[in-house]
Image 1 (cartoon, rainbow, N blue to C red):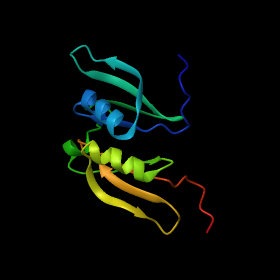
Image 2: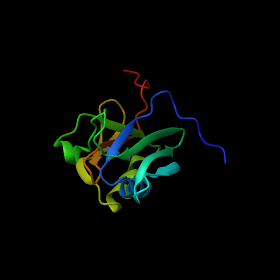
Image 3: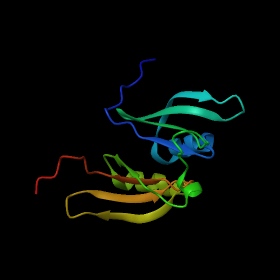
Image 4: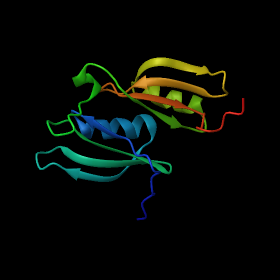
Length: 138
């Protein structure tokens, strides 16, 4: 099976339960696992998930030199990920069915996007909409 080549920026996230995160990201946003490495203790050490021609990486939260935690563990969020979709209304229905915590309900922006923002079960922010970076013509 040929694997898509992600862009030059590939976000990586930490989750306390990466297996559940993979399942949620599949259901809520349509990500497809490309590569999943078990940690030897029934969990996930590393995973790569694709959405279209883009990808993210994720793994379990652990005490290491990076010091990364899930937002739920850290008590706050310091980043968010924007996912471009062809139809925000379809994505909105799908993500609501997956039980996402709504931060900003579906709305139209002054720069021509239709979008919304949610938190995943561990608190990571996901903005979803029709705007593609660099496309503003104002």
